[in-house]
Amino acid sequence: MRIKEDVWNQTEIKKSKFICYLHRCFSEADAKDFLLEIKRAHPDASHHCYAMIIKDQLTRSNDDGEPHGTAGLPMLETLKGHQLQDIVAVTVRYFGGTLLGTGGLIRAYSGSVSEAIQHAVLTETRTMNRYQLTFSYDLIGKLDYFFASHEIEVIDKQYEEQVYYQYQSDQSWENEFSEITSGRCLPHFLETVTVETIYKKNGSD
Image 1 (cartoon, one colour):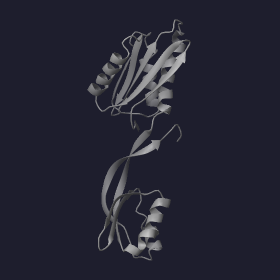
Image 2 (cartoon, rainbow, N blue to C red; image 1 turned 30 degrees about the vertical axis):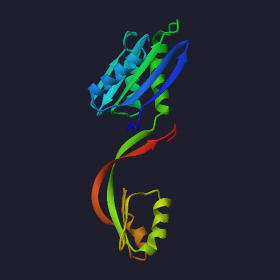
Image 3 (cartoon, helix red, strand yellow; image 1 turned 180 degrees about the vertical axis):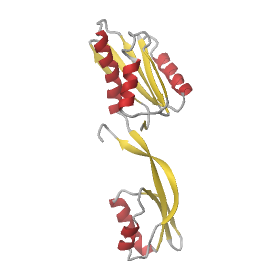
């Protein structure tokens, strides 16, 4: 899964501020450019820790001065736990004067990423088929109602001598179209496509 767009979230633990930024990226260079942006935006921060996963293959993490294994790695494991890829997480810490200890740091940094993810819109990549329907104007009402009630995405509509709809779905719905149109309208397969669809929005599955 991926995040649809960049998000950030701030938490405070014993007067230390943890600001986590999540950025969608497709290369290590892009991730490092984003890290530099965050460092420029927070030049006075105590730490700029990060973790990245690119194409489910390349992983990197950095504690940026925090005790070894207490920041970058917990952040990376949190990204993995949410099955995310093509992402970099950067958590900025402003030290509040109280030491959190090893366990406290691990919880703080992993928690900063988890809470930021709760604010993200997540997407997943799916393989779907694209179809075309050709039908007469008197069937528009029935078919529009069917598409809306089954939440099927119509990606193109053309109104000529006949009506042409293109839609994509993981099934053809051939039997249903045949039934509601008395056999007058059947789907024609066009191609198989890879699409990115919304998996989670606003903190709920």
